Length: 238
Image 1 (tube, helix red, strand yellow):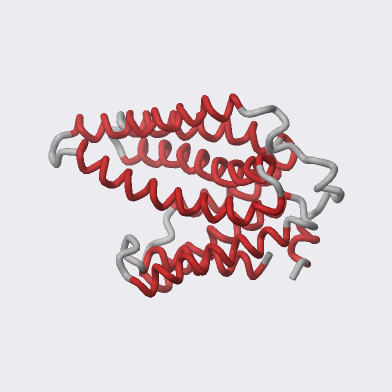
Image 2 (cartoon, one colour):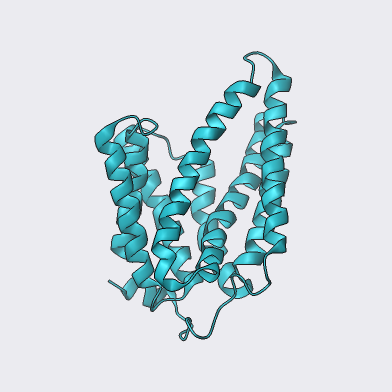
């Protein structure tokens, strides 16, 4: 698990260095890093509980990426990043207790509300509050989504599904950038508000899909999770 986290952090930092996957060597490193990370994580999940494992994965990954961004790219570790670091362990515990589906549903709704609210902010204080709400939604969505994926596919193909998930994420970022450029007009506030409303709608569509998932998705399965797991066990797994 420790090596999986290191590989994921390396892939994330190389994604930044790739300049939108336009630089060959960093782009290759992105693929190698993510594939290695999910291959190792898949092995960890054979023995460790999904919720706690992903809580450690997400929490340490966010901290590592934030520190790496500061050291290699001069990026500031802002308040929202710190909030995300603090929230992630709690999200893992919630997933472990209530299941990925429930956490995903609530996370998507929180994120959608936050994005809509962002289109109406008028002060720095309001931005901070709304950004905190959005950070809470983001912190819940990614780990909960991954837990749901582990329940929707067989263990033998999870590595491929995780890799495809990251590929789809990067493709979505690219498509989103192109779509945004068609909507936003510099100096026109309403165009930015429309963009936020469209973005919020995409989360609401995903929210509707998450509700339609079987209630068993994201829940612990006895045939795989034969042990309850603990943070001590996770950190001890080398």
